[in-house]
Amino acid sequence: MIDLAEDSRKKVERALLVGIREPGQTEAEISECLDELADLVRNLDIVPLEPVVVSLHQVMPQYYVGSGKAQEIAQLAQECEADCLIFDTPLSPSQQRNWERLARCCVIDREEVILDIFAERAHTREAVLQVSLARAQYSLPRLTRAWTHLSRQHGGGATTRGEGEAQIETDRRLLRRRIQQLREELEVVRKQRTTQRKARERNAVPHGAIVGYTNVGKSSLLRALSGADVLVKDQLFATLDPTTRRIVLDNNLELLLTDTVGFVRKLPHSLVEAFKSTLEEAVLADFLLLVLDISSPQIDSEWETTLTVLKELGAEEKNIQVVFNKIDLVDRNADPVLFARLRGLFPDALYLSTATGEGLDLLRERLTSLASEHHQLLRVTLPPQRHDLAALAHASGRIYEEHYNDRGELELVFTIAPRFRHKFLEFVNA
Figure 1 (cartoon, rainbow, N blue to C red):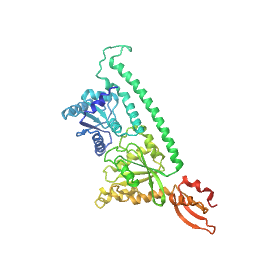
Figure 2: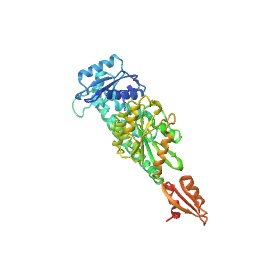
Figure 3: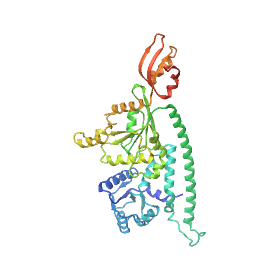
């Protein structure tokens, strides 16, 4: 299948952004959305031009906006030599076709921008399959865009289709078959993931997920806590594939932390569905670290967006620990009102900087407390020959009491991860 729209985007260098101001939406809100869209567009190496904002009272079927406003935008795109129009709101397939005829350039919406970024960043087999499925489902109703160059040489009846019409139907059939194939491949991968998860549950190590808006420092936080090599990059959607690392805390406590894909405003529902197997780490985790960028002027809307996505996933009732990152980028003395307001809203929140290390010790203490809730307290008496169990208790648990009795037996009171409990059962004190 030839995708002329995709081919044309490879040549796009300048894009005119179009924002739609719905009734009740403030100028600040639409400005925030367009700023984020501009950041998304830059991730595709496209230069965003000064955006156009259209105040809309009623959605029009032909262009989404009125025909007069559509003519103005098309004229402006030609004047500023834009290669592409990018809308911050979803366009229907017919609206995209109408716009491309009118503006005579590539026309895409926010969803297609995000799909393209995801396609560039996906690396694991599962992520590649998920992106491919989302793109195929998005493309299916838009196939006519790819074949407008083919003439319809025959008119009339149902059996006398033109060349373009016949090709479209062929491509639809191939694309539907491809969608079914991708779903089947994803099902295999999900079964493998379920098997891996059951093995992890048997180990019963506490599991947390790091969630939050994109580019707030989630990957940096995982790297700072684990010391492991985790991709850290100052760009939107730098992390698409879930990365899990084992964190060793004080008193030999341990837990697993997973970095998940970042959220954005207006995250397309198809992508939420496509990445549920990635985001379900947040659903299945014992607790969530919800990271917010305290230096962001849009911190309130980013908090709301994160909660909205968590609700879609059914994870809003989890034990959520709020973490404010990038504390080094704000002047606490210059803006005491901000901190007073945040402390009022989030009295148990932690404030830290992954760049300087400030506050990480407090976070590790909080994680230690969370992990200890998943360890079991045992009181055992070990015979002299079971030095192996004594060593295991010291290596993997936290010792509270330890002494030898008159018979040379070691009496221990300690906490241990549930996966080791069975080794001590025959020696547990009644």
